[in-house]
Image 1 (cartoon, helix red, strand yellow):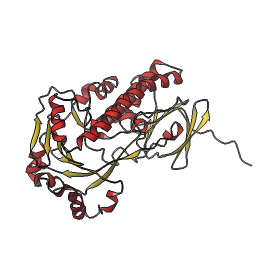
Image 2 (cartoon, one colour):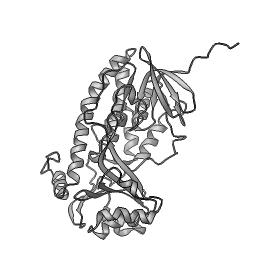
Image 3 (cartoon, one colour):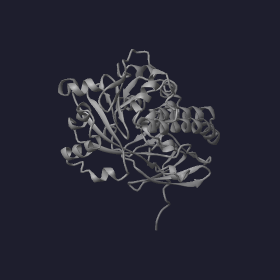
Image 4 (spheres, helix red, strand yellow):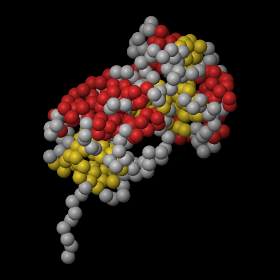
Length: 389
């Protein structure tokens, strides 16, 4: 004889994903006395590196940090000098160079530092590490049941998918899946650049480097610890990376640099001098203007909602402002989740569409044959970058 089945654990608000957007949502709610449970697949906050530098925009990312009460703490952690920009062509000839004079509105911060700032602002209890979501289903009335990889499950009144490009929550509201954009990256790191790689350090400068040509480019930035983080960008079929053995560091470098024949040696060295294995990345995006009908008890934010290419620098900023806006909407509509989600999505959808369109257009411009001239004109204010090629 069996006894009654125990009810599943219940969380009024459940956030899937402890990235920048999910943590911002949790932080703004927590600052107003509302607790949300956060579930993340990583076994710990330090389980993997968090990527490179982010420029945090005054009207989106920084506005979110103000709402979270973390703006001053953020400014204390920014990379001084990180807003410097250099634009070169394939021969390493400079077309634009601008030092960081401290007046820019997009200070740079290491993604890991920003995530740590958000984590430090939250109590440990509400974040469940090693909690990989494998599925979710609607129970009616806006409630959902969420299943984890360890076989456990919970229910929630509000399910927020902040779980990135390959979101497990997105299928509840949309059939859209990210598509390959035609661009692949190979990431490289050069450590202690000023002493170990002085030529590369000089080429990159104090902030961001764009070295551009037709269908190819090197995008790089200096990190606060003096290392250089490099992306070799190639317009290529989706299967191009499959033909490179990235377990063979030297061979992988040779294969990547075949795409950069005739480029200046100073630029090619950004790959040949890498101090760690090269990392392949395919760039995917959701359709520009992706949105969904109002679905009771569930919504998305960040890449789960509007994954886009990185070429306009909007992804992290949108995740931050999405999280803050959703929290503020919930606080403004206590007891009426649907009104809050409607208000949030009406604000988020057009903003995301505009940024996704800009990212797509910028990606097309950056890899034209005349990209150095066009990008330099954009930075100089002589020509809007959104002008069609």
